[in-house]
Image (tube, rainbow, N blue to C red):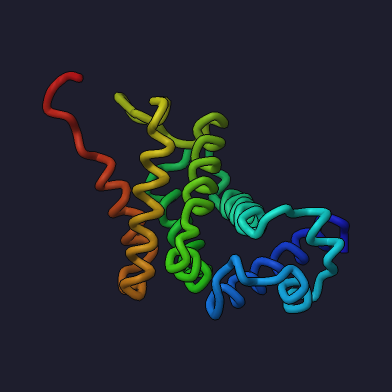
Length: 183
């Protein structure tokens, strides 16, 4: 196993341990020792890679988003329904963790991770942008990230009765709203 694979494996372990502990107690009352024991990592590992528990969540979400982007089709330009379907598949695979993050008020890392990935895909010219597209607008990434994350969390709370493909198309349809006048 490469050093990166070991780091990723340790990050996943400490994140899952944190999520498990957060289900039973406030994050502020979780000791580093207890977290590291549950994760099977050393305290040295924790102090070398993190200064707060929030950093564990942030780093794990970034790892998840990187893996999400690797799973996207290798086509020249992604259509919004395809991109969103893949995102909702990611959410479905991690729905329990996302519920814990929501219930404990830690949804901001989800929003930051999505926004970072979206901005990367826009800058890399990987997203199809039709005429009048807003993707280059200053606040578009933040708006989209907040809207998608809130929708995905609501979907998880509603027990994911719709398919990821349906949700991906729904988000794309929501984004087709056109302005009746000029700004």
